[in-house]
View 1: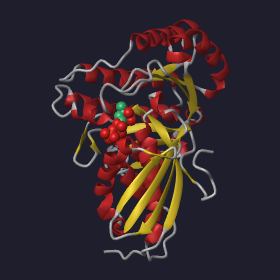
View 2: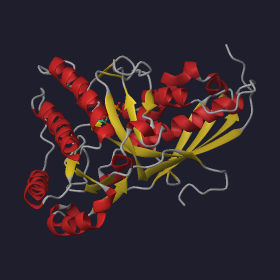
View 3: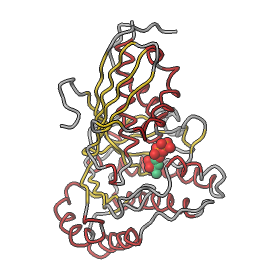
View 4: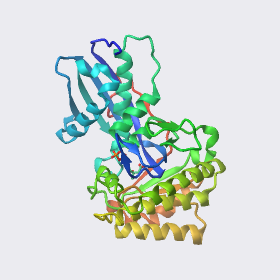
Length: 356
Ligand code: DP6
């Protein structure tokens, strides 16, 4: 086993949330996906995390969110640390102080598990280097993504900026169920490298079903095999669409994936209907604006009622005006969060406050 130093050390990272266009839905083993997924990292919705270690005979951790102890997250973090123990020997002899904050509200309907688990995984990957007695100083993104996956599947994709692919896909030899890969700049048309994503907060309340329980619905789902095949085909198609910069095909695919996800939940046992009447009204208005007014706009959704609008940066102003008139009245508290493709995680210096 690799030797490690018993020292006090600190690592701080900021990491983004992401939005999947081809959805990860269903898993087996230790958070291995049933199908490949493709997402992009967001720019504004990020988690900042600082982890400090001190040598201790009683390894463990304490967690604070926005400066306050949050016992509600302890079980998830404890399970995560258990799962990654064998990868990070220093965990056996150190106590961890973990501090975290999100730039987006917890109730915003944006999944915080992707950004929080990837920020934590990046801190632990750096601490692994600091505690190692080897000379190596470069961050290992494959390790960071592997660790992040074990915290939350979608977090595997958040350790990179831009577009990423997670899950074995025959068209890419390097792809893996264990970790995500960044897609190269040459694989993405400039339009999609600067894609805008505005999130309509239709109903920002608690989710009716956790994503872990949602994934479990796929275990005995009657459409399981057909879903795996659909996601594989959509992965192949999306890679071609991103390269060609085809907006119409992009919207058709993104909407097909989002509505299939909801269709799978509706046809599960037990069944969940997470769409709100205003989610459906927003979908009608978006499709009408595209059909009748030629707006370059489409949508995606995660496992909840909120709608993620997708549109090119060059139409930002025109679309924002339309959005305010047509879609804002459908949102709880008229709230819309504006975001776009981001450049990915960054290391924070020890002087950078977590909430700056
Ligand atoms: C619908 O990554 O949140 O957002 O692995 O159980 O933590 P766990 O699930 P999670 O699932 C995300 C599901 C999704 C689609 C996606 O992001 O690909």
